[in-house]
Structures are given as C-alpha cells and as structure tokens.
Picture 1 (tube, rainbow, N blue to C red):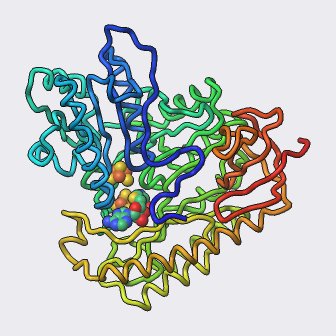
Picture 2 (picture 1 turned 135 degrees about the horizontal axis):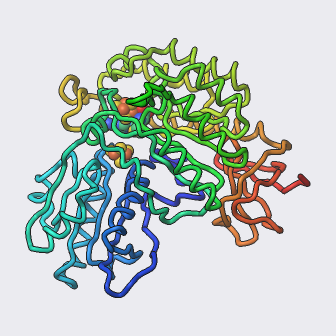
Picture 3 (picture 1 turned 180 degrees about the vertical axis):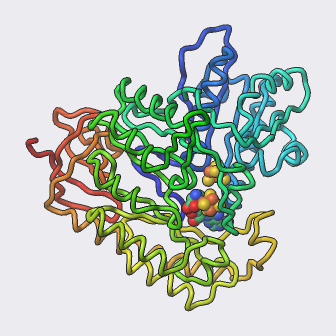
Length: 469
Ligand code: SAH
Ligand code: SF4
Ligand code: F3S
C-alpha cells in the first residue's frame, strides 16, 4: 500500500499520455500529459476534443509535438513539485525544436496564474480549468511569440455539450464529469481556489453522454464530482428538479448492462435517498468513497468538514443498514495543524470501526491561500507526521487484507477491463465493490461480465477462476 493514490491495474501511475488519433500530415500535433484526479483526466479528454474541432491532432510522443500541454494538480506540494521537475526536463525539447509551445493548464495554472511565466521560463501558455474553450485562440497568440493566458473562473461553464475524446481508454470504463468546482471550503484544500464555484451539469447531457459511450461498447461509467451528493439542477423553464439520486437512477436505467459508479461522496451530504437508490438498482455499484479525513471531532471542525465523528459513524451505519454488502473507502490526512496524539488515535479507532476496504492516505501539506494556512500553524513536526501516517497505513493494510479475505470461496460478477500486468494468460476486472480480480483468460475478453470464484488474495488484489454462469 502506498501513501499516495494507489496505482491500480487500469490506471498505471498518475500520468496519462494521450493516444494517437487519426493524423493528417497538415495537422498540428498536440501532446497532453495529465496529473491529479480523475476529473483532471476527464478534462484532458475535453481539451483534446476542443482542439480536435480546430484541426489539432493528438500525439503520444512529445518529440513529435508542436504543442505540449501539461494538465496539472495543486492538491499537495509534492504534486506541484512533480510538475516542476517535468517542466525542467521539457527544456530539452525546446532546444531541439525552437517553435514548440509549452502550456500549463489545470489547477496549478489557476493557482499561480502569470507567476508561472516568471517562475518557469519555458512556459508559453497558462490556462485554468474553466477556460479550455479559449485554448485554440491562446495557442494562436503564443505562436506569434506572445505569452498567452486565461485563468478566468466561470460560474456557468460545465463543457456540458462537449463530447470528450476518450483517450488511453480501455474501451470498457469511462469517466463522466457531472459537476465542476467546489463550495465546501475545507480548510486544508486548494480545490475551491483552483476550480471555482460548484455548478452542476445539465443531467440530460450527462445521460446522453452515458448512452453514447454504452452504445459504443463501454460497460461502465463513473460519475465524477468533488461532492456528487450536492448535485442539483433545476430546469429553468419547467422548474423540474434533479438531485444526485434522480441522476443516478436516470443513468442506471440506460441499461442493466451498464455499471454505474460515482465519486466522491461527502459525509455531510450523502442522503438515505441516495443509499436507497444504490440498493434499488443492481447496476449501481455497491461501493462508496466516503473521505473521513480525521476521526476526531475537534480536528474535523478545524478542517471545516462540517460533520463530526458521531455524524460520520451514523452515515456509515446507514450504509450498512441499507446496502449491507457495500464496500467503503476513504481519504485520511495525518498530522493536520494542531492534531494531538489522542486525536490521531481517534482516527485509528475510526478506522477500526469502519474497517475500510481501501484508503488513500496523506500527510498534511500546507497549501498557500487556504483557510488553514491563514488560520493555523503547520506545527506537527515531520517525523511525527511520518510516524502517524505509517500507523494509518499499517492499520489500513490489515483491514484491506481482512476485507479481501472475506471474499474467499465466494463468487462475484466481474467486468473484464484488460490483460493483467503479470501475465498474458491472465485478465483482470473489477467486482461491483471495486475489487480488482485476476483470473485465467480462457475464452474471455475485455467488456465481458464473468462469474469468478475467488480462491486467493493479497491486501490489494483478489485471484480466482471463472465458474459457469
Ligand atoms: N472532494 C473530495 C476530495 C478531493 S482531494 C472530498 O471532499 O473528499 C482528495 C484528497 O486529498 C482529500 O480527500 C484529502 O484527503 C487530500 N488532501 C486535500 N488537501 C490536502 C492537503 N492540503 N494535504 C494533504 N492532503 C490533502
Ligand atoms: Fe476540497 Fe473539501 Fe471540496 Fe473536497 S469537499 S474538494 S476536500 S474543499
Ligand atoms: Fe488536483 Fe485539481 Fe484534482 S488540485 S486533485 S487536479 S481538482
């Protein structure tokens, strides 16, 4: 288990390199590299689509490119550092090909704005997450030798009608952004500053996109938002209201063969209506990512999470009651400002209570401009942060193993996503509860639903054999 986002079989690492699409010789070539969350990956697909409309083709080699775009993440200092190192490497391509333009897009672009031009001399273009429609114009501007920037944050932009160009896709699972921005202002978090105000996309455009990918052979969609439970849309004419439970139902009804996933749920907003909707539809996956951040109420208050320990536990109990076999995963931050030892212990005891199937675990990283940076001191020494994080990781490893062991000798419906990294003779897929299962390929292919009996596991992976349907 890793302290950063776990690398799974289908998304290897945090870097996505766009595949070649049909190239005409006359077309300019764009190379896009993506860091950060799934929403950022989906944004790169939107960017590729916007540029394709303007006769730009994507390339999987930075060496061929006329334009290099780095879609960036600001969530922790380390994420930004990774991008800076990458920009350093890119200096070489400018030496070889003088005319190539380098753009920084995404959250770091939004956070640093024109400062990026001063700090990173090779950058020609800076574009924030709400300004991707202006990219073709900005590229033209950069081609005349100027520095080009647009970091305007919108209250309306959802790129609703843009059909993302599916990139590096396995052809089975697709991500669909259902909203943008975040209004929550958790004190540690930079996202409200880099992504702007929360806004929900027209649900009918979401259903149309999901239907389109299903018609093209995809079998699973993941509905994405920073806080999907606060999805809210009102038809300006008819006043029809659609909330997240309604939206999930609309997508689930496309076909029983289309699996529906979603991320991220917020403990303060996840309603019983959402839980009953998950329980009602077999094709809505029994898996909820419910970030806890801390198990201590005083720390949660300082984090501005707007729920406390008792509230979180009640929501978990509601999940168990309404969806008994639901898997739950979480995010945890170790060493937030002023976190006392007994408060850290409460995070560990919360983990014992829930026994998460999976967790993404982080050391607190102070982000400039956030509420926590302005209000609190980042005062937990590095060695204590490290020790607390390690205790969290060790505990999670034991829980992941225990949760996986409970799957032994049982049969699960697995959607096959591709060939296993370990061997050509094996394929892998996921259960409804988002567990990766590896099993012998035999006659099966990507996109098949296969009944698999689990016979072995580690804390990260299940292994099994297909059984007769
Ligand atoms: N919208 C999601 C989280 C998005 S960011 C939610 O509300 O749960 C993903 C995770 O990164 C967060 O859940 C948090 O655990 C972690 N994170 C965010 N800011 C951080 C910071 N400053 N330091 C360390 N971890 C952070
Ligand atoms: Fe950040 Fe909180 Fe919004 Fe999640 S809900 S993106 S942690 S401000
Ligand atoms: Fe990173 Fe921005 Fe996503 S900060 S986690 S890429 S919303």
